[in-house]
Length: 238
Image (cartoon, rainbow, N blue to C red; front, top):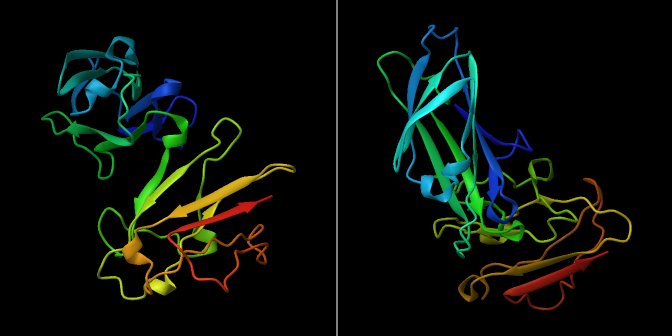
């Protein structure tokens, strides 16, 4: 089982205000029997989805309940389309995990047992994954060089992106920490980078200064480094 969205096969971000449709794809290694192959999927996030609009291709959904459902697959590849629910609640960023449960009549390939989606209320809440420099755990980051820069989903229709992050207390080289993020601009467009941090990380320990590079090349512009950095650094780039 793999996850994507109806408009982007590479994305697993669902936005309530946009009614994004999640796609759950099931692929079998061989054709199913004539009566189909029934698998069980569990999730504790089904109340975040519009179950009235659930649809299936090359399969039939049954036993739909609060904690999951059964899916009878009738072709080697089958899909479920499930829109995120616009509940008008300010919930921020959430995670929805769909798990393919073990069964007597099938085996689950390694890495294909879960589909994880990120849910947000509006486009400007679509978050880059929270990260840290601890080097381990679910917040591990790998965007410490330009080629590994995380692409921001900035666009005319998505004019604001928020990024949450942390640095573990065990991280020794706080001043040497660098995180790279990338975005594309067209002529006449403007981007504002506003970086806030906790006061405790500023006083002599860490210096937040955004720097802009054009297409992996030389530095275009950076803030004045002669003045002490505060916990609300900001750069506007044209």
